[in-house]
Amino acid sequence: MLGEGIVTGMFETARNFFGSFVNKERLTTIQYPEERLPQIEAARNFPILIYDGEDPEAGLRCVACQICEKECPPKCILIEKSRDKKPDFVGKPQFYPAVFDIDVSVCMSCQICVEVCPFEAIKMDTEFELSTDNRFEGLLWHKDQLAKPNQYYQGIHPTEAAKVDQGLGEEKIKAEAKARAAAGAKANAPAPPAVRAGSEAAAKL
Amino acid sequence: MTVSFAYLAGSAAFADQIFVALKHWLVGYIPAAAQPIVSALLSVIPLMVVFPALFALTTVCERKGLGRIQNRYGPNRTGPFGLFQPIADGIKSLTKEDIVPRAADKVVHFVAPIVLVVAAFVAYAVLPVGRNMVAANLDAGLLYFFAAGSIAELSVFMAGWSSRNKYSLLGAMRAIAQMISYEVPLILASVTPIMAAGSLSTVAIVDAQASYSRIWPHWFVFTPWGFAGFLLFMIAATAESNRSPFDLPEGESELVAGYFTEYSGFKFALFFLAEYLGMFAVSGMGITLFLGGWAAPLSFLTWIPSWVWFFTKLAGLIVVFIWIRGTVPRLRMDQLMNFAWKFMLPMTLINLLNAAVWRFMPLGMVRWMVCAILIFVPYLIFSRALLQGQHFEKRTYTFAE
Image (cartoon, rainbow over all chains, first blue to last red; front, side, top):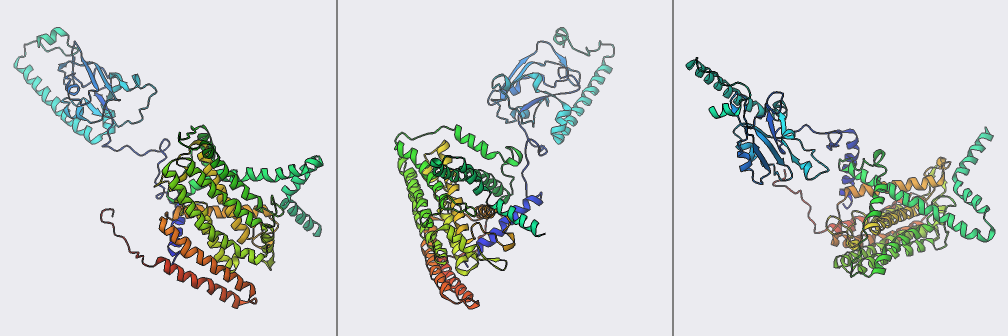
């Protein structure tokens, strides 16, 4: 009969209307700035540099190998290698980036830099509220803005970070064992410089 | 006791006539020569304030209501509960650029929305919004109402033609085809109360319904012909005011706003204003013709002012309009035309006969039975005919489920 369908439809919409006031499950809207969903682990946005410990300068994992700079498809990374060296997480003296810039207006979040990095130094962030009133300087991020502690990385990507930490730990143990073996072999040889190797020490190595 | 009762009755009557008394009091201060024009202005200005305000309120209620029907919040950012949304919308449409196509007929393009709004306002002149509250009590009020309402078609064609855009013109053609098709059942449906009341005056039609048997009102909607007539009238009114499910002229999801494609800024807003004003006017007429106008629904509720009842009924009809919009999908053009000419028109004609039978049969149950059958059987036949050759089966979705 004509009109039957309209009446059942009207009841259905009325049910939805009143249901949205009493049933939280119906009303799926998250009112974003006030309410927000927990960030999912697989989310990724722009790269960050990871550092160990407290000091972003001393603990930065990046050794300025410039692989990411070369691989970056849109060429948004700029690295200037340091002249001196500093010890990395196992104590081995390494170069470090004097300048590390990422232009996020160019970055396409492809994660290739993360894939190619042999030092677990560059990772993807999940931060997305990045609006700025300056589209040139505001979107060109420098090393101090990019450096994030390892704890932060563990917070945003726990599974991935645990794997990375495990790998780095094993590497460190291996390196220590090697160092101990080397120390045992030439016990009377002078010990390698421990902290902040100078350019002379680096040249000697 | 009697004193306090009389006092209560007196204050109720005062509240009922408060606006009428206010107007007389104000007019009293005016020199006699200027009194007619001031009196007319005082009748017109409140209409021009109240109904656009109602439009603002309706837009926000509609958006929130539709949101809730679709399990969303709707606008809730501007002011408390999003109530200032119409102000934001108004500022937005005022500050937008007003673009006129180079090839357009500039004068007609400019005049079209104004004609539409004026036509919508003019129709309110004969709408009794309360006891003694009508701007002009014309003897041929209903005729005037439909004559004023039909200016809208002219304005739609002006808008479509002057834009010099083929889509605007096609949209205007569609809109006019629809409006003219549904104007016939709209007027035929409203003839039945004229037959019952014996007058074309809207005031007389309301007076004919504003009496009670014990507590029950004599509204025309509580008769078989009145009930059918009310439904037919409201369906035709929905189509006439281009509301969903008859919103083909706009069809924002498939057309680019139809006949007002080439309008922007405040002129675009004027089209919307006129559409809603037309909807309120025709709903008000539906109330006047079938729902007893400003009359209270039960005899012991007459102490509530008459204008409160009118606007309560109007709000109720607006809610139904929004509810329908949230429920029914848009019709196709052929369905629209079939519905108008193969269902609405014969049903309204039969309803005329039905009203005549009701008028001349003796009071009692037999009259009720005969008139109910006289409208229900044609309804069955015509709806069967309308649905003939259409097979409805449960659609199975291969990928979506």
